[in-house]
Length: 400
Ligand code: AMP
Image 1 (cartoon, rainbow, N blue to C red):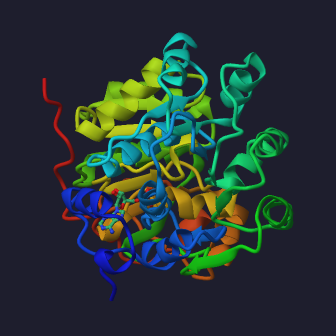
Image 2: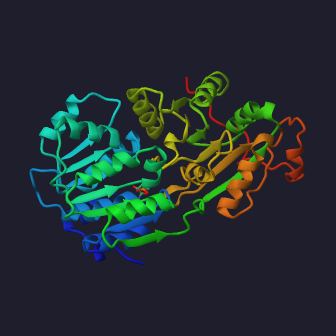
Image 3: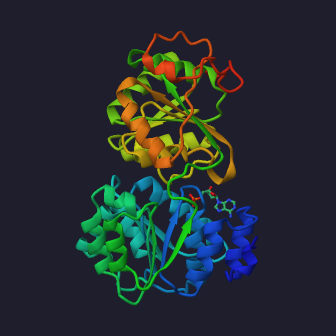
């Protein structure tokens, strides 16, 4: 077991780490931090929630020399992730104040221009808005010494490859590049070969397994009963904070109306058609406990750090098996226990099998006690005796 003090971090950073309450480095931190401090380019593959942000932020902040030009650029696929990383950078530079500017779409330019004029050390950005600033001439990347490409597989899924290439091209070759991706398909390997110099690779755990602290199960049900089962799961589960994932924005909106009408919980909704200020309100309110439930598309599946999520429900089995791991990784983060339920109906059997192949494990089928099931052949695969869902009864009562 290593300790932070042995990793070579600067004193102000060590103080900030201890202020954050971190007692010992996670595996990716213990392995990546010394390499980054040596000046190596690094490819990191790590499950969500393993402390990846501090793994790159701490050694970079440790090496920062006060300057009037941007020294570090961090690219993130989605706005909320960029905002979250901004907070982490502020937290870890507490004893060594550094200027940070956050650049993402969905908001005006004025505050961002002001931020850029205040001579930021860090730029944290999503690709589209960063390119806008570059083409407007409000920013140059020539002085960037540290380039961090985070959640690269997701950026590529979202079609950002050409943007990422353009951005990397505008940074000087004389830089240190850190590259984080949960998966390494050939397109990503090619990008890494092009953007990095003799990188060290740090892979933590299997790229395919759900966090070990999450108990997860399929809940088979007839198609017509998915909404009723969802309501019953919400009602009978003693959650503190619950994330419900849907496949589409429309589905998220429909469930939002349904739960507002039929459940006792305080609910909010998050997807990319919602305007940025409401997205921020939804996420902040969920984090602070104002909302007990957030209904979200995969926008919220990866990387977002929402502590204390006690339960996850997948309203549908995700079509992309890897998303399953990311979604249920919302709970069981940083070694906490969590439960994840996935509603399964007949049209989704192929997706369910794909998930099981992906994680190389059979996922248990469970039934909710006292739920009035309509017969479906799917239920024949389930255990004959219904199982109790988490200490039964209760659920959340509306606080009005
Ligand atoms: P991340 O994977 O960077 O999103 O981090 C997941 C969560 O783990 C965040 O809430 C971090 O604040 C927390 N975390 C990161 N590193 C540590 C650590 N060494 N000890 C305790 N918590 C940590």
